[in-house]
Image 1 (cartoon, rainbow, N blue to C red):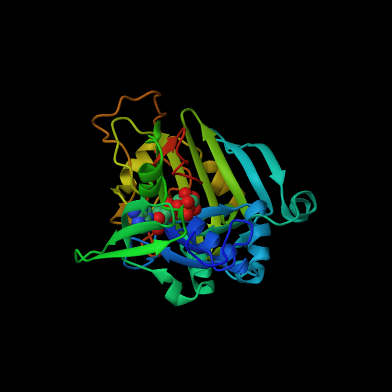
Image 2 (cartoon, protein in one colour; image 1 turned 90 degrees about the horizontal axis):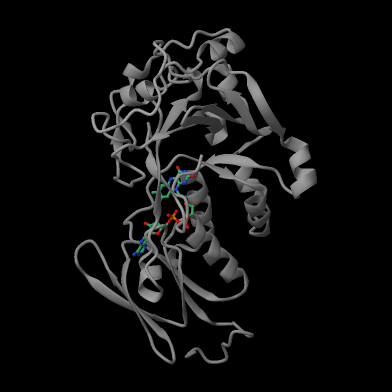
Length: 343
Ligand SMILES: Cc1cc2nc3c(=O)[nH]c(=O)nc-3n(C[C@H](O)[C@H](O)[C@H](O)COP(=O)(O)OP(=O)(O)OC[C@H]3O[C@@H](n4cnc5c(N)ncnc54)[C@H](O)[C@@H]3O)c2cc1C
């Protein structure tokens, strides 16, 4: 340690560089600042853009946000779930199981369970961190530890380089962590064989049942379909998991086609949605000219189950052009690396 007076048992003034300004990196920075550490965050992106879609903010995370004094800020945009796991049959929409949350959740786990737009969460954490501690356009490319400190090398988009000397480094740089590969053995994610379509649907275009503060999961052969409201209920987050076939591009922003999504879930119950809402869930997917998602090439795909002739996809109806980030998706990975896809 080069910082005078700083030791692991007395961390005052310890300098910590965090690589990655996602939810993990920003939250770590806020907690370390609470302990009085000298923290900086280094993010490769030139701006923290409004990327991503829905994410579950489980009670264990909510408890931590309260410790950061962000409980009230969270409720300004997050939706409190009244039920977390409402499983439904793909065939007829029958409810197979439901786990009530609401007050029961607080009683059991000491906090409520929310769903939120990832960008809102990142924005909230970012606003809590003094601006000068976040260094954007800083891609970490090398870490050189010595007996006294550790040196981090960064490059920016214009090709410029910079060096930061610190006492400790936290790698919060995601599933393809550069920090991890520089300090430990290579860890390869294992492909789950799934791909996930993600869409944001304006709430006014969604069936009423999808606007409930409920995480609903439709289960079917080889596929499942998840939806819940986010952004104060203004948007419905939709994630649809299907076999990936030959698709291998892993990305949160890869483009996809709404027609592919509809084809994947052809024959899934939509009658159930209509009958519960009294509202016709007429497919308007074509209203959205472009969506972001990852999926396999249909031509390369080997179909594992045959779909019935009906071509109505559950909840495909409300997908519209006015969502603030129409649709994005990523391959779902499982295994030793963190799962990239959460519902
Ligand atoms: C763009 C994006 C969109 C996402 N959207 C969703 C979503 O809609 N729903 C969902 O459930 N989960 C989403 N996730 C994943 C989810 O946010 C994370 O899995 C989870 O929050 C854990 O976050 P993390 O902070 O560990 O890593 P991440 O959220 O992956 O953040 C890692 C950060 O590190 C930065 N970084 C990577 N390499 C370097 C480097 N060499 N130098 C500097 N910075 C670097 C990245 O740009 C990123 O900002 C998304 C992740 C990303 C990156």
